Length: 164
Ligand SMILES: [Zn+2]
Image (cartoon, rainbow, N blue to C red; front, side, top):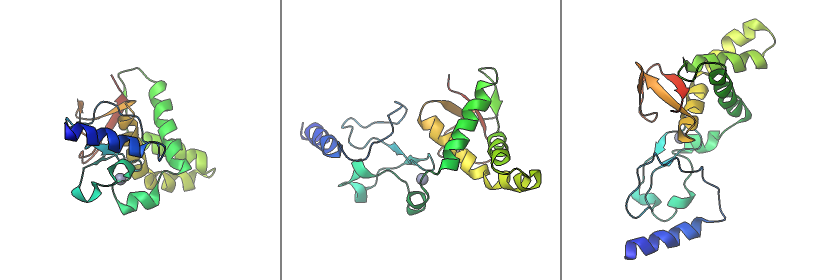
């Protein structure tokens, strides 16, 4: 009883502050609801609840200081858009590689093709982060070997497809 009440109170305390991304229903939720896992706004990885955040869990939006410092830049939104566009151009079941989005955004940014050739590599990790954020938003799935994998822990090459 007490747990449920404090969950409501803590949720109300969080209202009117930072807006959180909508829950996709994918995050595991405890029965109290107050320790529901969150997804980092920057890297798209799951933020595991920690006791040190007990007092301000509602305000936790980033998994690390690095992600807090980095935040989401305009180029990161472009990568998200690029993933959406590339998937939209293909069959619903088709997959793309994050590098395709990285190359597309790099090409937009650099008129000179040689510059774009280097720039896309720098956008590879940002493209993977963009893909994870889109998983959190319920828009896409990340696969390896044709199977959906956990974006928070997947290592190595990934593919992206529309959420089913
Ligand atoms: Zn993060």
